Length: 137
Picture 1 (cartoon, one colour):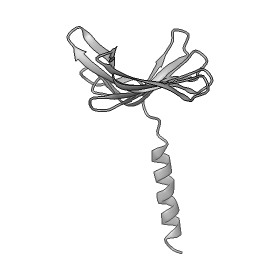
Picture 2 (tube, rainbow, N blue to C red):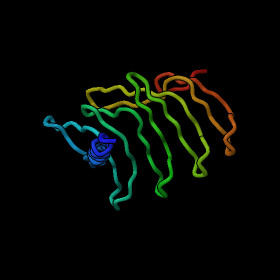
Picture 3 (cartoon, one colour):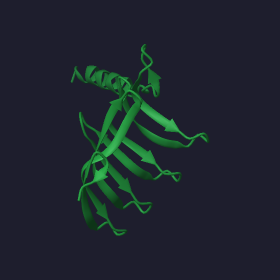
């Protein structure tokens, strides 16, 4: 029973430290984007959010439509990106894989791999394979 005050103090400290607000949209000393990032329209509406590491997108990114609904999600892996597009009713429209090549003229994003397309009700409609952005026969 004597350890109860110590336990309460420890739990309170853990709670207070975990509630610290994470800084958003920050750059490192090399001017690379780092950490949690929010992108807004000129009117101030949230358009996308996700994380950067050393100036490159990492993990999950969510892009929103003008009404604030999820429009596209990206899951950045080491070499591939899992992409999902959603309809305005929230149903999945299409999903598949993409790649991002960082070229001298800038990043090049393209579909690469299997893509599945869904009808308005969210039922699988068709599947197409892509290579470097072009559908395969």
